[in-house]
Amino acid sequence: MMNSMNTMLMPFSSGSRACDCKSPKVHKVPRMPVMIDQQNADPTDVRDLTGTALHTVVDHDAIDGKMLNLFTSKIQAEEFARSTPQRKPSAYALSRREQQRSKLAATSAEAVKTAKSAETAVPPDGGYMELYEHIDFDGCSWRLLEQDNHTVGDYSNLWACGFLWWGWKNANDVVSSMDITVSARFVVFFDAPNLDYGDFTNTLWVPGNSWVPNLVPHGWNDRITSHMLWY
Image (cartoon, rainbow, N blue to C red):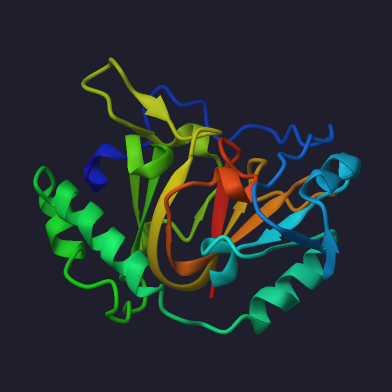
């Protein structure tokens, strides 16, 4: 586990990249039942939508592996997200989250501070996000404090896991699992830099209190490039 000081903007970073989202990206096939624009669909149908932006809303049914909602309209995605009832993670998810945090607490004083209770309401700007390189919270990790990271425009400028000038990794297109505890209602992730909402930019909406051990079922493994908090 890397503490907040290990996630940093490296001095050799080149700043935000120009958006390269002009070319349509091939959608990754989700590994769970899906609805596209509120209609039941086969997960492989996303392949037919290459060139069309898809906005994936991960509500708690999706986190539980029951149903994933995708929209071709960002307005409809936002309306659906806004209508999604807020609820706490399941008892199983809370238990697994605490087990994971207890393991991490052995090597991170920062984890001890934030592992006290996943059920406690997060005060404004008092939360954090932990992003992991591999599924099941493995590999390199990037810890982002909510108060300093309402928006991050380019994950290629987020570095962690290095020492001096060696071994550093950036978070662009490598995130595979995440632990999110923020006061925002949702975190909106983008697969293009600079929070680009262009015609070819896809988004992933994740609840502000989420424990996601694997982004593969959602079709978003190794895709995230930027994010903003949605209050």
